[in-house]
Length: 265
Image (cartoon, rainbow, N blue to C red; front, side, top):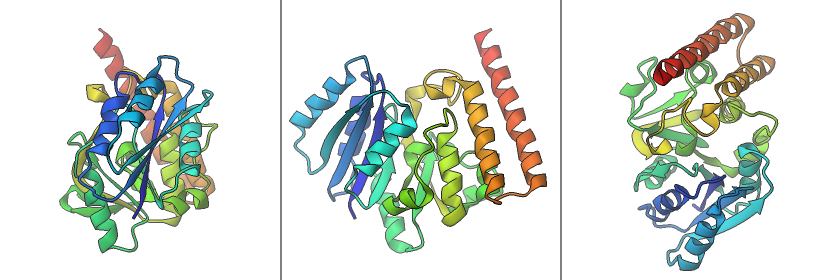
């Protein structure tokens, strides 16, 4: 199995090296293709990647794509379209895989031919509802995903043809673009989660309100509502479920605002 790892990069000079090294250091022995998509960075982080390409002596390949700034969805779409692997793994430029992450996912895929999309836990966090944490491997459906966006992006890998079948990332979305993509995948495939902590995300930052895309909470909320509306239009949820989940997402948004305001004080 050849895996292509897609890493969008924007002004990531402080974190990109450790993200790439976490892929180079995987216990998975087969060749890995690492595609770093520089989305119009201005801090010189591409020079770090270029140096790593020159010094790389592993059986992993590192490829750098430079493009004008277009957002994380356009960067992921570009990287996936140029990937040569039959499986795609996602990683953000400020996140780190634990060494056995890829091998453990591949082991599950080899045991179960139904798996076309699989994530893991991150930062010692688990999916909190419906006793999912009691199972080593479980699936998550549309409504369960809308209660909590799960699994987290840098834990996910999927067959490349899944990307093309569901239409890739919606580049118009400026928030919750992963959730929207997950929901469209869930319409056609089971979303599996390996119940193990295998990824560290954010270099210690909070999951919302601190920096990066997650700092723009209004855009996150807007994207979540658009993803919810998309699920309703595809008949993944009914009208009553839509109304309940709209309220749920709105209350979560208000709670985030409250937590951030209290933190500032």
